[in-house]
Image (cartoon, rainbow, N blue to C red; front, side, top):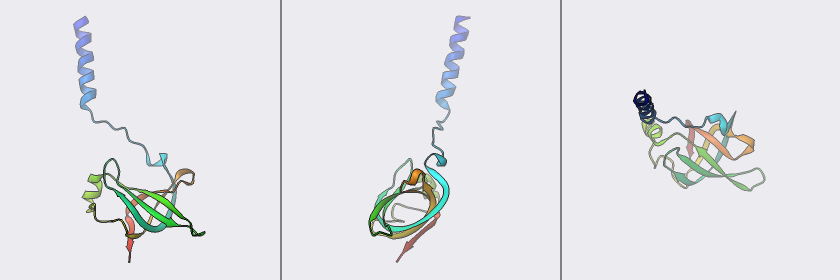
Length: 119
């Protein structure tokens, strides 16, 4: 009986190690349902997993600039949608819409179809 219990435990552990990990946060953990639109200049591109980020400086109504974090999909998701590291570059002026950050944080959940590169 000892060996059967031990073998069952080993088999269960092996199955758990084989299963992919799904430890991912929900969008609602960082963003609210309200959608906002911002416009600014890209100052940094973070093209790496787990999510692609674009950091943009946005001028407020008072003239002061604020750094916003635009969070997008992972590399595979971006690539499958036709995006590359050079689709949006440092220095580009962009207008983008997406779900706003919780508690007034300057972040936005980027929807790839809602980004416009301005001239």
